[in-house]
Length: 128
Image (cartoon, helix red, strand yellow):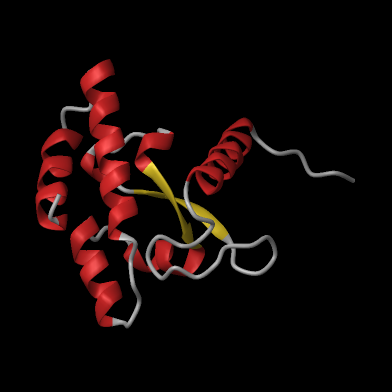
């Protein structure tokens, strides 16, 4: 019996494949290599949904399940700082690129009013 995959799961998988192709196939937080059956990859919202972040590819990066789960509702820079305290090297350049890409899409398409101040603050804190 073959399990069916729901449309949202298929869309999430497609976005993850595109993200892994666009970025390095590593976790944005701990930089562990992401490979099928070794380190499970997830899509990580740079701007959390709680802060108005959309489920757009411009708002997503690849993260290992461990890091994605541990981040919880921490903001981007708080979690990046915590990762560094754990001895990991979060990819701040990738985070900045993603935030800037999201900012450009919002400027083009409009909307996402709740996410705009969060993006601006996180870019400032990341030194962009």
